[in-house]
Structure formats: structure tokens, C-alpha cells
Image 1: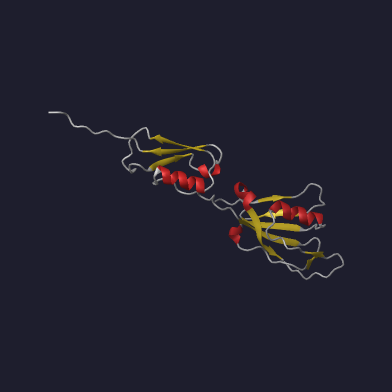
Image 2 (image 1 turned 45 degrees about the vertical axis):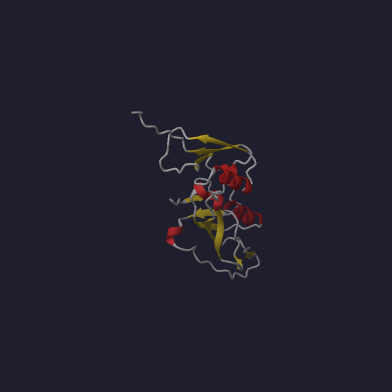
Length: 185
């Protein structure tokens, strides 16, 4: 996965400045959280917020400083990125100070449904229904014989992610029957 870097500054000048850098340079830069001025900004916990939510929350609370974002900043996975670290974690900073957050990718591969290939047609049908499949189940023969598929068992299932397509048709493919004959003498 390639990481990207960018920098954006709101045109109004009233919102926070956001910078993004690659996490390959290490953890977010340290900032102090012990500012005691009358205009001190209390840093909220930003754990498990998205990048957009962090910017909106801090803007709504009147933060006019800089937000430094590091971590998994690949736009392709942006919807799966949540804050997993922040500096400072809590405390008061100047309203024009810096808050650094690290985004972590929370993407999880989709869960694979129950395996039906290799089961008998009856066992595959039963397992699909137990998994909640409510659509029609049909059985067809493969167009060509598959030597790697055992006779009487399911060789292929269509659609491949049938467990996500609950109210349609699932097709169980079994091996094509072969007839072997010998010539008469």
C-alpha cells in the first residue's frame, strides 16, 4: 500500500490547518499539553474518530491551530481509517497549538461464508439453509468433466459469495457424468 502526503488549508482562515504526512517517519510530533493561558483549549479524546470527524469536532470547539495527521492516509482506504493515537492525549494547549493524530486502517477482509464445495448436494443444501440462505437452490452439471472433483459432490458454487446474495438463485455444480463403454468383439 502506498502512502500519500498532502497539505490543505481552509480558504476562510478561521478553521484549523490540516497537514498530512506519511507515518513512515515515526510517531506524531510531541506537543506540550500544559498551556495555562486564559484562552487555553482543552484537547478532547479523538480515539476512533474519522479524519473528517476530527477536523469538524475541533473546528466546532473553536480550535484554530494545526492538526497534523499521520498514518494510513491512502485515499483508497480512507473510509476505514480511524484515530488510534493522538498527541497530546489530553490537557490544555494554546488555541493556535498543534494536535497530532495517527490514523490506523481498520479494514477487515470480508467474512467468507460456509464452504459448500466438496460436500454432497444434500449436505451443501442443508449447510446453505442453516447459514440463512432463503433463495432458490438449483443443481446443474458442469459443462465438462473435472477429474479433480469427486463424483456426487459439489464442484463449484455460483455466485461465489452466495451468502451475501440471500434472496436469489444459488447454483451447485456437480461433475458431468461420464459413460465409459468398450467396443463389442
